[in-house]
Length: 126
Image (tube, rainbow, N blue to C red):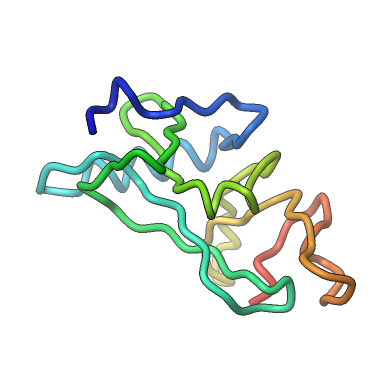
């Protein structure tokens, strides 16, 4: 499948803060092999029922959607996208406390959880 036929995401579907775009762009520049973009994926676990991760990918298929950013693409398959609709990805540097990508506005799965999964402050619940 070519990138031209991929479903293009809008910022209302999934967005990145300036900090997240800057950090992802920096990381993509460090990759030496040819990639299609940064894949965001979901795996079972965490108090929200889902953990999210990111990896570089050279694969793009018909079930993928693409968020076009300056210098790179964010790629999400349709199963993961159902959990990310309306989410904002941020990059937070806490100095000595570490740095990480944070998923803001996650919607909790089910009726229980840690209480931060769907908060405006984000959290990965991991």
